[in-house]
Length: 178
Image (cartoon, rainbow, N blue to C red):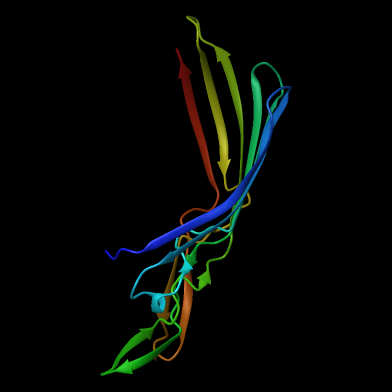
């Protein structure tokens, strides 16, 4: 592992509502993260792999009745920085990628909405019991997890291929507090 320098700066904002039947928050972060390592990117500063320029979170919870609660969360963030090949050449029937700039590209933005409903009831000896039904990524957006570069069968055409982990995902949970 090579040693180098890093710097990060930005601002965060949060607006929150804590009382009433409708509660929630809106949060926004604007940030930059840079790295400089001798021997990488010709010794120049480059966008760090964990740089997410914009990050927005919106969460809401609505108490329908003493037993029923609805909740929703929406999140968005700028795609991760990554290094993509700038070109390729052939060396003894092998294709070799050439990388000119470290983390010079961005993956597509990440966003999803999760929704759910909870039914709760006091337990007999104090505490509470709760059943939660939820849907992760309710609009089934396939967010980038990994981007790979693959050659065509003749080796001449290279294309970026995005891999994703989850689309829509339902869930059921049972919580007990005591």
